Image 1 (cartoon, rainbow, N blue to C red):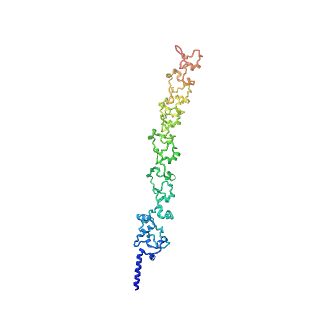
Image 2: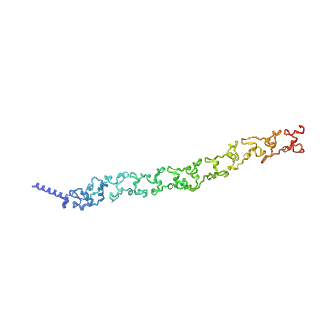
Image 3: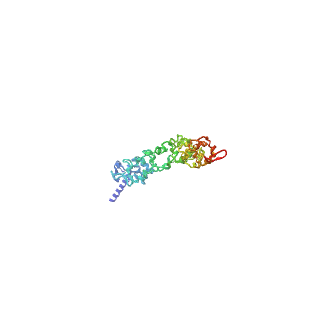
Length: 460
């Protein structure tokens, strides 16, 4: 009898428990596994607030509907976000109830949390070993509401001050904030030559990238003012310079102008000739335009310097003296210009022998100034003068042995003019005291002054 009563009681209790999911009423407390948290306490009196009888999967929808987790529901439906990537997407898998009023059923285990299940996997500098949750997740803000863009967290690190916008990922990665992967070749100003190795801040002052000028002069104004053209050549630096080297130039004076640079002109710096704005100045091709101060001839030779000089040496002249009024012969051909031209104003140089050889005149002008009558350019000591052929006074007798100075005793300023009369030289020898006149040759012979002649014989 007792056994039958116990069996009937157990069947009755089982029936009640099975019906509890449908509507247990005041009997809910008898089958509830434990108290719920404080926030759910108002729902504790009726199990159907959170449970559907015989349908465990419906519990998730009840949670999401009650808590208005539409964002979480959308993640689960789309398989994205942390909740959408969990293998078990039932809420109770993580948020277990009926463990007491003060239990935190939404507690996060930071050490065990797998951030790769979120839409923002932690890599590089963001790795869990390098950052803490609170570094990105602000207090009292839902974890899912933490921003995923760089700028929101790294605004204080933005050295560009917003000048490049907020898309930090275009240049930076999560390995290191200071390492960039920006490809300048994809911009409208590809970097080449020496620009490739230049630091960004060299062109982007104060890390301002927009707007950055693209013309050379904006960045190289200082180079132009200190060691360049000082603005004289304008601002189109690319007309001459290349990015491989600031000092290198692609400007070809032969090709790009009518004045090819030859000889000593080739290594000259541009501003050696171009003293003003190269685009407005009128620089002629005449040598005198640059070399007026070097004209030692004081314009006596005109302004066609190229007639004698060349670009290879200003001091070496190509002048052909044979085309002048004084061709260089003999020893003159080997002389330096300055040997005769004491002053660089060449036209001032005389063409007479005594203009250069006055100190060499051993005759002291007693034979006049026409040295060329006896001497020649082969050698000063070599001379030739035929007195009989080239003068009106024939030398014979004792005259043949006389030195020139025996007769030519007085200096002559210009042309040599000496009387041919005997008395002009022999007045002191006239034993007749002039009584027989000045024509000594009527009685005397040149062989000896003491020898005289008559009509019939010579008297000794």
